Length: 296
Length: 253
Image (cartoon, rainbow over all chains, first blue to last red; front, side, top):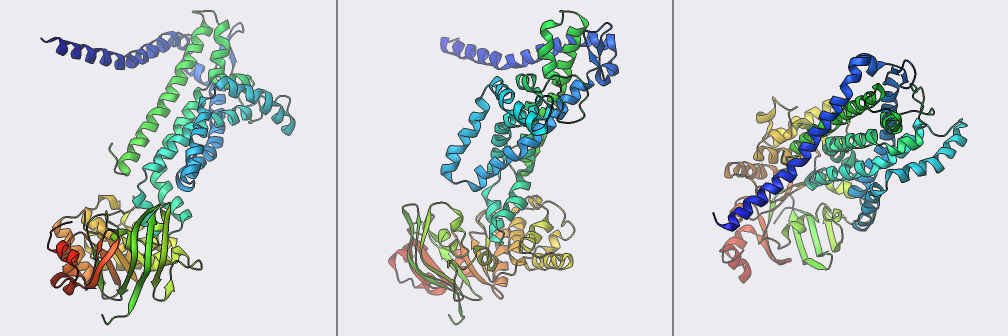
């Protein structure tokens, strides 16, 4: 066999291996999550673990109910969605439908720059600015609340939502807009009745990916959510989302103990939630491409 | 031409940025007949008809000098709303562009955006427009289906029906058969012949046989100029300009 031929084969193998390595890591992570998480289900009972209302991992005897943590994550994520939909989708609409070339060239990188700010900086911002602000406005014992986390996470998810929504809008063929204008529709009607419905599933994908970013975010919620592992009753109470619990407690949980396994089990639950989000986003975006006649 | 003048371009110059796409064009479209625009790609004929319903102003960095009249109305006057012009002057595009909505909604859309709310009226209008566009029999059983599931030719007739529903006076066809097979093309041409009884029609086409078959008047565009304009018969049998003759005999283009 000639040398060059051999070389080519070698390259092919190297790159194949590299690209499959993420699959290998993914499988490895999932295996570890299951292996380290399952023991707690045996110890505390699966349903008791998921739906238990008390999270007292260091008491004697300990209680491992993660419902407060799951609810905290869901609340904070829901709040973040309420924040990031108007910000993200609104700016995408502006960028793609209203802004001129120059405004777009300026604004798009600025919004994307928001994504490059480290989460600890967002958390810091939440601590020193949003916290005292909320405390004052709502007259609270502490400003570190679900609302605070929602605001910051919403802001953090905005670039994701904006940039994917913007892509979705730009995939809407101009022919649809022209057709709409040609029958005497104005800009607003064209936007709300043709463009947004056509881009709808793409925008939904953007929002789901934004949610998945929000629910997995750790540093920020650790810093601003307040950390109380109780079932939340309002946005103005401190909460402890799943990620914050893992990050805060892993250091003090003795390796191989129940607490340690419980934290892995939380990570497993979190992974399953984001997995579902991502699958949903993928399915919806595939439908979107088919609907617009783009390749599946 | 005996019919009255429906639309008229007066000393029209048009620019994309610094590039001049149309040079000093004067042309009149008569009511109840078909006016064809022919010429090689990039000669400005599409740009020209898009001035008739103010579609070009949706593009950035364009400039129009000169005037376009609909009846005696200067359509670019600041007092005139583009939306009103586009309702009166409909357009069918080169590629069929139905909305990703149902067949019914594709037609009712134009009525709804123009403020029609009455359901029975809309339903009647949808049926009437589909009949006029010779599509009714093929789709009456499945008005709720997505328009994107129709064939290319059916989609184009749907776009014509969509245009007819808003009761316009002029219909602009921008190479309506460019992406259709010969049978669909024949159907569209038949339809155009039928429609001219009640509408004024302008059609841009690459296909000279098509221009000869359907139109009463023909304009030949070349490099942004209107080289020759007159009765179709004269243009095709006794062109005055050498360039027209060269084009229709197939020496370039």
